Length: 184
Image (cartoon, rainbow, N blue to C red; front, top):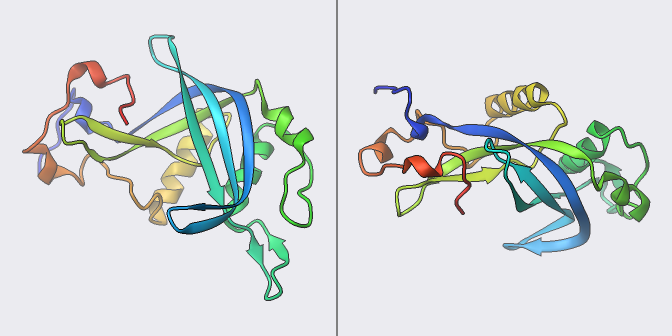
């Protein structure tokens, strides 16, 4: 295996600053056959290296930890939603049925966060495919440390590092003009 420098294909992830323009929480939402307790849909203005912005909607889908009777006993995978509020310095409580009161949702609007986009593969046209990680932070270094820690635990499951796609490299290339663009 060989590693190259100066090749945008070797970019496995990158972090961009974003402003939250809106947030909507949906509860007991089914997506691809999985019912999530909470699905926080967040509208962002993401800043590219050039300073230009683009709109992007990311979702943080999660489920609470529950006891045998179905009562919420902990955040479970919804720690990702709690983390958003924690990192923005917002304290509050969810309701007993797992709903985030509207007043707390409104507090995140206009706030800045860092979003990490990671590689998930190569498109048929040869461009690299990226996806937003559903864990956010206000600090780039802290977000990167959290991502590194998650990788050691095998998350995100669909992450494809530059080293892992050696077999794809022989078949596909990426155009230089897509380095700063997300192509979905």
